[in-house]
Amino acid sequence: MSDAGTELDAAQERVGDTGEGLSKRLEQEGDIAADYLEELLDIADLDGDIDMDVEGDRAVVSIVGDGLDALVGDNGKVLEALQELTRLAVVRETGERSRLMLDVGGFRANRRAEVLELAKRVIEAVRTSGEPESLGAMSPFERKVVHDAVADAGLRSESEGEEPRRYVVVMPA
Image (cartoon, rainbow, N blue to C red; front, top):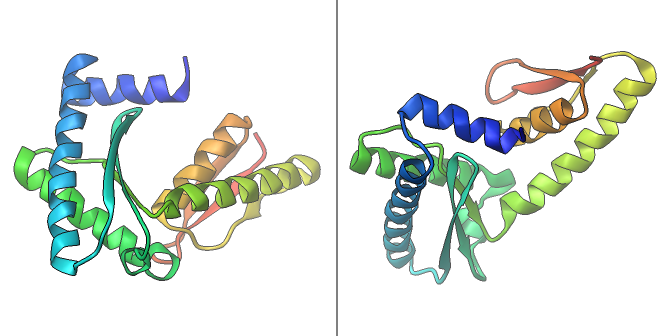
């Protein structure tokens, strides 16, 4: 079974939802998040379109448009904060924890591609040397991308350190 299928099964088991029930709940999360973000865009007098999707066991909401850099901030710090605020808005409405993912202007999609390239280089280095390799400090999103790539490659990884200097160590299998 694919990792996405495994994650979906685990999420369904945690919340007692199956298939259609989970999809409806994730769509509801996306709708709540979209409403919240549309209000924020109006208040900030920013133009952007909201796209919603469901990937695996989480709702994914994207704000697309020009001139949204202020919603991303340096290294995505504003985006991280905005994602947490959006998750809180969802929790307020549903009473349930949300794993909603927010992207603004394609920042996360671009960052995912960059982090995947880094992970591939480190995976090869660990395979070649047989020695663990530590990466620099990363956001939770970036660490998850690395952990997933490492697991797919058949190696092991662990997060170490304390926020905001938490990092990933890639180890041989």
